[in-house]
Amino acid sequence: MLSTLSAALLASVLSASPDPLNPAPLNTVSGDGESAAQDVPWDQGYEVEGPFAVLPERARADAINGMLRDRLDTLLPTLMREVGLDMWLVINREYAEDPVYLTLVPEPVFAARRTTMLVFFDRGPELGVERLTVSRYDLGDFYTSAWDGGADEEQWARLAEVIRERSPKSIGVNTSEHWAFGDGLSSGLRRRLESALGDELSPKLRSAESLCIRWLETRTELEMQVYPQLMQLARGVIAEGFSNEVITPGVTNTDDVAWYLRQRFTDLGLPAWFMPYCNVQRNGLVPEGDQSFWGKSHVTIQRGDVLHTDVGIRYLRLNTDTQEMAYVLRIGEEDVPQGLKDAMAVGNRWQDHLTGAFVMGRTGNEILKRTRDASAAEGIVCSVYTHPLGFFGHAAGPTIGMWDNQGETPVRGDWPLYPHTCYAIEGNVLVPLPEWDMQPVQIKLEQDAWFDGKTVRYIGGRQTKWHVIR
Image (cartoon, rainbow, N blue to C red; front, side, top):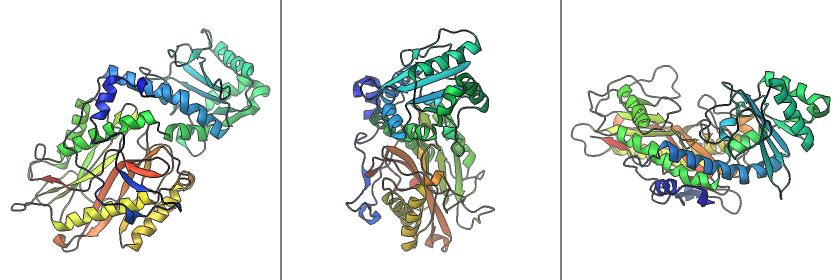
């Protein structure tokens, strides 16, 4: 329901890309469930000249709360029924918040207060999911308060009473052996909970691992309205950093670029979820140590250098993760060498193989194998380390390769691909460069994409042309 978003938010979103509500598709699954990378044109990308508007904090709160209410009203009931839980408890303490907690509470909540208890009870399709808080501090009209306050023991007794009154068949709690996102209930709180519930209710406790992952990985229509804006902001600042406004060949070093990106995001009010970095590849530069990622940092940028950066920002509770590349023209050069243009095209081709393997129900491990097999068949030397995106940068959902493991990833790589999920299409290709006497250049790309169940779309375009520093 778009009416829940503020006019300011919509105005901001609609300026984000050529058509943020219908971004260009990368691939569409064919009738036999397959998606051929060769059917995807290589030009599904566009350049971004600079960042777009950023909402002030108060308007951000309105936008976040509109999207949260929509998630709680429409998405959560569906997911609880999907995983077979009719009650879900999210219990945490200040300074030890559950990973899902801040995705469930409205702005301007920054943390749990004392011991904060959220109770979700599915009353069926007609009445929907009841939302309660058994906590000393209320959470506005998002949750109905079920406790007036008092001693610590009274809070736990009231929680048990609330549960007993509703007589759930199963009670989901956030415990997991393999997923940090589903393991937010501390051991101390688990003991307190079991003690409060006693022998009558404790046997009904179940792991809510699957619900946590599905809640975190699923993107709603409203969230996909705003996500293109995030990508435009990230790519726009990269375009600034990879320009002569920031880089003077022979003077500027890679640390200068990295800190420019960090400061620029800070000035825009966009927190980075990791430190941006910049590195260099150049003819004759020999990789040292682990060669999974080529390039050197802490060096002065010279003409003829290939530059790479990696940035991740957070805005409206959503995260981006973006890698792009630039070339510094030599004296007398008017354009990027053809070998580098061809290498970028190989990187885009690898991306097409990866997104072409996205079919609903496939696991991350299956997608990884199909991508590597299809790339190898064309002689493309690649490494795949793609991950989900959303409320976290390295988010919940299927792992599709890891930079230090190109084989199967147990458990997290076995998670299947669901619709309405987002991913950082991340990896690299090694391409011999004629201009470097066939020394390989590593094309390291990462652009964010959305899978709707049939089609993969880049949320804010992808890099198909080099940034150029003159």
